Image (cartoon, rainbow, N blue to C red; front, side):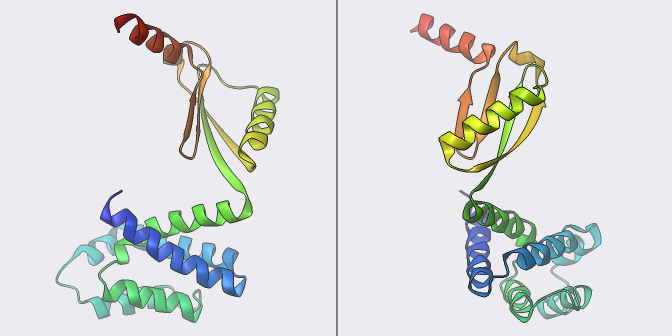
Length: 178
């Protein structure tokens, strides 16, 4: 894991702990999503990346843009990120925060890549089976990749289940070569 990702995760964890302590997870999700959108703005991105703009000015600008939308604790997070030249991490922090929130709420986003679109019955069965196996409430996203020939590949966090025909053929080829 890169140093940037580690830093983003640490800030997200700290923000999540503050949000949990105050029962404001949804509010923090909203605030971080807003701050991430501001940081992702092309003009703001150039300012954040510019060494000519002082850290204090960037913090002041960010807080002015977000005026009335942040709690005092979130304003302190912006100040801390500014002091440490980490405002560019806001989009990653927002993503990490949402991962922590989903985990706490027992939710998981799962991506299924299949050779053809899954029907609603197939999706419902898959959601139920994955929910039982993983002990979470599953949100399913289906993508189509015809090169799989048949079957599907399931991506659930760190878990990858390759039930595709292409994967099986590759496994067979690897077994024959050995």
